Every structure is written in structure tokens, then in C-alpha cells.
Image (cartoon, rainbow, N blue to C red; front, side, top):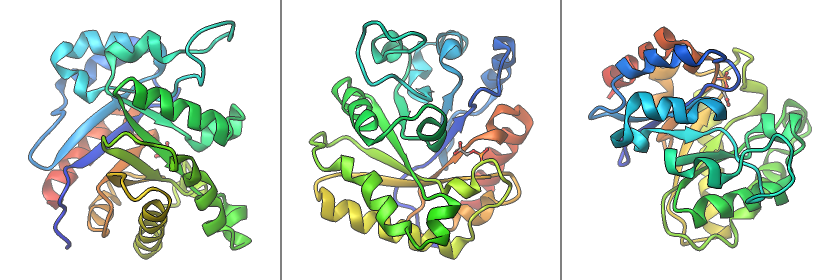
Amino acid sequence: MEPKTKQFIVIANMKMNVIQDSYLQHYKNLSLTSDNYITVLMPPNPFVITLHNILGEDNVKYLGSQSIFSEKEGSYTGATSIEMIKNYISYVLVGHSERRIFFAENNTDIQKQLRLVLDNNLTPILAVGESSEDKANNKFESVIREQLSILSDVRNSNTLYIAYEPVWAIGTGVVADSKYIEDAAAFILNEVKSINPNLDVSLIYGGSVTENNITDICKILNINGVLVGGASADITKFSNILQKINEAN
Ligand code: PGA
């Protein structure tokens, strides 16, 4: 197993699967960090402040948002601006495929969100990934390259996370195999270097991560974390994943 030089990060993208704020009380008992990992909890936006209050101000470094809108304020019905939640979080996920698909967010929107996150000194997690159709048509490289192109004007030197999430692996129970992820990681890191050589990028994997496959994922070269979707909204499954990460390192 390759030595991991960076702390393994575990993002809990609860999506819209936690629908009672009382359920968040369970996350209070989690070990949010250990020698081997750091956790970032992303509840639905209306519950961000609730979870912040449950965990306390000292733990704001373990909190993130699943999405922000690309404008700061104005007549945008239903949207959450970064101004509203920036004091309660440290990370923001941008470019998740569900935002691209169900909310029609395009690269221009995602680039604006990325700028807002960086301008507010929060840490972005940019999600990229190819669909099964892209994969079948050998479009992996061109699709990923296009999604990464928004990094060209990023000047901020803070760590930026890229979540490699093949769309066909999200919520399907089909996890990409280790070699496939390793090759994708090498391509992404290489591409980022040519787009913007000054960036400090850390790569994570997402897509059907469970307690059954986490041990293998931890061993993949250049993968320094995971984005857990479905399993993060179940406290038992999520705790088991953290436990396995401790055992794997
Ligand atoms: P999943 O979601 O773990 O349910 O596949 C991953 C994701 O949100 O990208």
C-alpha cells in the first residue's frame, strides 16, 4: 500500500436523505477525526445551522454544504447563497452530477460557485465524472477535461479537493474497480497540472462507497479520501466506514 501523505478526508454527502433534523443528533457521537481521517458532514442546507449548533462552534471545521447558488443575493426563489451559511461551514461541494443533471447547473454556474467559495476562504470540493454514455463512447478524457477547465483561473493557493465520481457509480451499488479509479486519478492529476500548475489538489473518490469496499478504496494510489452519499445518511453504516478506515491505515 502506498503511504498517504495527506490526511484521508471522508465527506458525508447526506443529500436529501436526512429529512428530520432530530436524526442529526446521532452525528454528535461520531469521532469526527482520528489519526487516519478527517470527516466533513454535509447535511441538507436547512439543517446546516442545526448541525452546527449540535456540534458546537469548535467543530465548524467538520461541516460543509452540499450546494450554494452561483449568485450572492437577489430574486432567486428557493436558492441558498453562500452569505447565508458561510459562517457555519468550512467546505462547499460544487459540480456534483446531481446538480448538473437535476438542476441544470453548467460549467459557467459551477465556476461562479467555485469563485464564491474561494473568495470566502472556504474549501471547495469540485466533483467531476463521466456518465455511462460518455464511458461507452470513449469520451472519458474530453468530458473530464472540460469539467476541469474551470480551474484555469483559480489563483487561491488553499487546498482544493477534486472528487472523481463516475456518474454510473453514484447510487447504483456499482463501484468502479481499483485500476479504473487509479487510471482516472492519474489522468485528472496530470490534467490539473497542465491547466493550472500552481494548484494544491487532493483527489477523492465517490460512487457507491460502503463499509464493504472502503478498505480497497483506501489502498488506491493518489486517492486521499472518499465522498460517501447514501451510506452517510445512515449513522450505523457511516460509523462502520470510519471504523474500517481506521483499521486500513
Ligand atoms: P452514493 O453517492 O455513495 O450514494 O453512490 C455518491 C455521491 O454523492 O456522489
